Length: 236
Image (cartoon, rainbow, N blue to C red; front, side, top):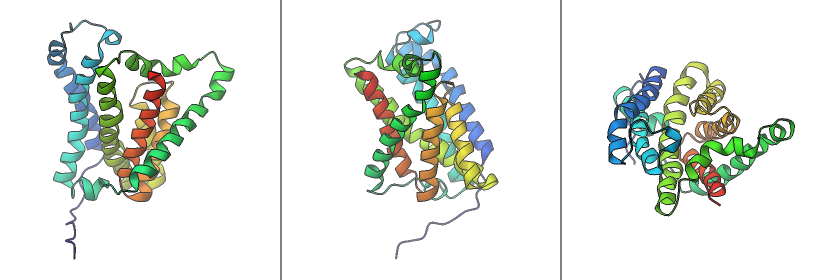
């Protein structure tokens, strides 16, 4: 018989989630001089003029802070990320998650059709933040972009938002409110108003996968596909 995972009382919560979010930004600011120096940039270089290598290296302290807190909190205040957040994967998660992520991306695009028809907002306005990254990706930069957006972001963000944040809210407000609230926080955390509807929609999809399967695996693969479709379209 397989050994049962020892369960411990859960003591982590929204305070830890807030700490992880703040820590990610604090570490990014603290390590900014080091990042800029390593990539040969001046500290007064405008953010929209930073090369892709600088932007990618900035994600190390940012994702480091966002990832460290839920992993540390679950180990110190719970039973670990596998038991507390469902940080595990099955073989079926990959094809199922990839398909769901692709569908979610097309559904997200469809959300903007009324906006494009009835307002002066254009597709260029909506894709501007992502295009600012893809326009800088050439040669090896494409690989770097994929590593950051398609590999690192799905893993870190699913652990943080669908692990720590979702489960913290669920313990207080129940599953339905946890799905909606964590999805809204996920969308708002990107600080891009035009992209909020698409991010909120994907948050709902990933949160539903996490609560129904009790695993982060499907959501991680869906996140991979969701980001990959967007990056692939912009690189063309």
